[in-house]
Image (cartoon, rainbow, N blue to C red; front, side, top):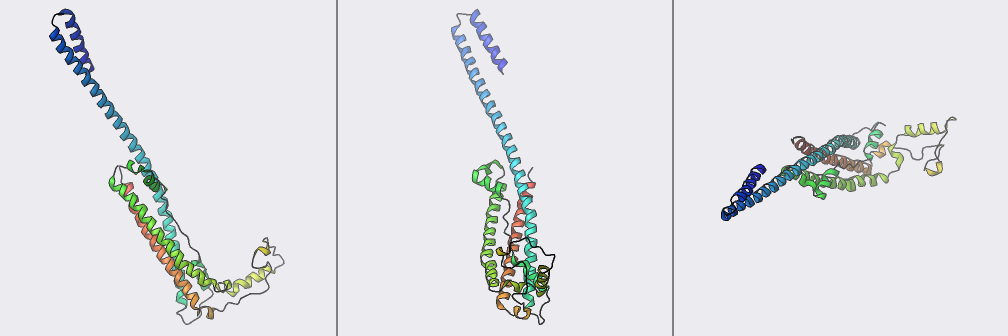
Length: 278
């Protein structure tokens, strides 16, 4: 293209030298030459714009690939941890149910019931790793992802997870806290068998016993002489507060476990879509 216009220019200049009186013809040819120069410049600009667009698209694809890679890493990490949390809550719910069932049986439960009574008394709140997704939404960089469907899925995922986490907190604040309050009305030793304290007394009075802790920073002395509160399992498993405490534990861990299952399903669904890109 450039060579073509150069030939026209040289031809016009040559004709201008050989036919000096043909001013009208020369003017027409110079006009064509000028138009050609303008067209050439326009083509150059369009090519430059196209190249710039290609570069921008290549950069966008590279950034999109990095974002997708990080999102996948976050979701895989969350999926692994969610599985553990679900299993933990199922174990706590089962233990709570076993304690509740003991109230409905004729015989006083075996000392092994104390093992089940200790399991539900803790809880773990886990928030899936959504740092990359939240950053994309808040910064506006979600636009780097070309697929409108994927962008909607990421936004919906964050909203669904946040909604379910609020419900997790609600069960924590109501049922779990209520269970703790009910058990706080019962002396702590009622959740340990006599054999536990008998062993503790024996160990603390052994000649070889060398405690490392400062006994004045604990409610229990280093050397124990007697059990402060005797456990009467028969009375314990007729106490409505104990039953209601473990009923609340059961509700807490069962419902929270279900909420985390929903979050895991959402996580798997988004992960499948992201891994399917490309």
